[in-house]
Amino acid sequence: MQVAKQLSIFLKNRPGTLADICQHLEDEGVNIIGFSVSDTIDHAVVRVVVDEPMRAIHLLGNSGILVVENEVLVVELKNEPGQLAKLGKTLAENKVNIDYAYGGLSRESSSGVLYVRVSDVKKAMDVLTQS
Image (cartoon, rainbow, N blue to C red):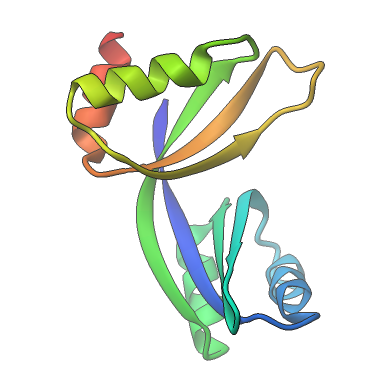
């Protein structure tokens, strides 16, 4: 388990906007390793974990894009029933709230990665490391 920098990018919700941002990062050699999109009527919040967060913040900020940085936990879970329930229960018992999470894996994978935004990163790291 580790802590990663997540970038929340606020974009207009229209065709091509997401592709343009992803292309800009690719052109600059920044790799997206985690990704989530939440949409509303007029804008989208794109959450990314990238291999070079500070560089991405600089690149996007210079393009006039609003970027907010947060810490997320990177939790590797086995690909078997009950893993997410166990994680949620451990955090809840220790009064750490999951604000949101995203991740995935293929059916053939033995484990996957879950990016978890929690109310208390240090406490979550401590309790999950012990469990």
